[in-house]
Length: 510
Image (cartoon, rainbow, N blue to C red):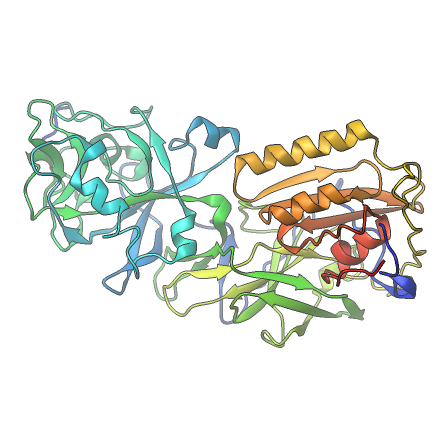
């Protein structure tokens, strides 16, 4: 159809005999169909983990879910969800990293602006610079830093299967932009909710001006680019037209989305809880009295709520779920300690095996403004028996002793440590938040700890067996402390500070 537009040295001492519960074990629930109920907190109703209940459009007929994200002229901006999970805007590197994004298209026109002065090439156009520069993306008050950081770079060199066809408009490639205009093929793509027919109401938008630019160049003249008119009809017009509306589109990195929350009174509308690198929380020793769980913690950054997330499988960045989790508010606000009641369904189950528990510091905003949170931090809830594990203190690790690391297992061999170093380097080179898993030996050398300390976005999940007990410790780079006078960090030290206590120690004395 033709359209018309351990060294230990006094660190642990006797306190280890009464701390924490038995082994943290990583895995899913074997051989069961156990699904945990959803608990919604009264002042924040989440629809799911990640993008949760957000849906895709009705093919060719609108039916969008909506997400409020950022502001323009101090007003929250509403976006249509064209695809809740896609890889079509990934570079090869993004694909290698397993990145998925959510494609959003503004529900209105935010302003009016000319495409360019005399050329319809998107790649160097005025409108591309406007969208990605200090007038929009980088303008104070449009996006917060965490919102801006969660907007993915978009790469799409050519049209893909499913894109529509407008014969008189050519495709305009994306080469790493964060903000862009839709192409004519995307504005006629059925899976995005847009009809491929000529004049169609799915493309009608209101706002600053009810015409809106596409990034597609006109096939027959360099001075013309595609736009959509008041009836949803696609045309081309002179690029210097200053009264055509701007309706931005962009992708959100799903790895940055922790929750989606419902907007009260607007069916199908949501706001997001975005990961904020400036927020963090570290737990102290978790204690339990029947079903009452006490959690001491330390917060870095500004928060107004501490939450508890309980899941039936291990959480990782980008997790999307509408069931199998519990979301609770920790009492005590941000005072440094709070309690919550463990739901009865978990009463006789083992944390770290049958379910997983996390705490997170949040900054929750009213209305349609985006919320923020730290990456969920795993904690261990003691078993109902309340029994502690009598751990023996770590033996001293001598610099010249490569055979003893205070456990029943030898220190990792040199080649094993080289493998871990290589894995950490690969994760660091990828950039962003990355997790490395490791299960060899029971101790870590200074240089590994220093690498983690120097790379706050890297997390090492270390599993090992000590005295016939299986442990898992999670070392978040931003919380790791490496000391030059400790050449080896043994199993009890690691568990005390990264497996349950979460307290950053003072530098030990020689």
